[in-house]
Image 1 (cartoon, rainbow, N blue to C red):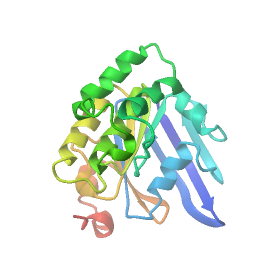
Image 2: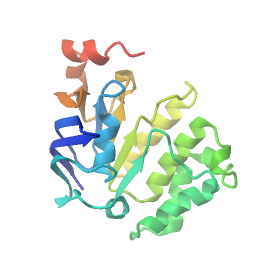
Image 3: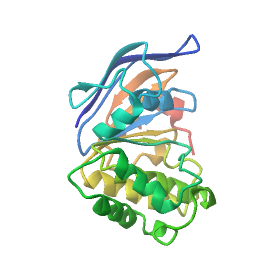
Image 4: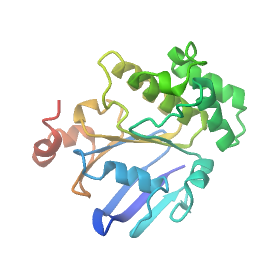
Length: 236
């Protein structure tokens, strides 16, 4: 299921936050949306997911328009979302957080298989299955957010700052998890503020600044682009 965003503009409280943003994510692609804090990355993902209404533009998955569709219906189509804050359910156990995704979308893959696949991706969560979501560390919440999104059996996955605030020990675990999800087939759109976190297997990179796409192309070309490096190349 290919995601197509064309000339997307979004207003928040009468301010234009996104201006004519266009991007595309095909199945099995990992596409990164890179930009500084406040550049419009999260707004882009939240608009695709139906939390925000666009002022103009087109958003389509598999040729079907998402504009005006409620968030739960977008998820039922097969669009998974792992937000920056993880947003796991604190009052539910790890197991319940993962299982709830299987209720959101029915697919040919049995729920038990989808849950088992999520635990294989992050085996650390298996031992914490009975713990409450509010008892997890930041890294564990990131893992759970990704595992829950995978249990949806998504055809497209939106990841907002999956490496933000992680310790150097947890970062490679999350990176390998994302690579494994990509191998399962869904396209992935990942928002990231640090160009050094862009995986080597990234298909395409978009750079956003002040709500506008200023670069679209190969990651290697972005690292040679003086404007891109001046904006985000200094991130550690």
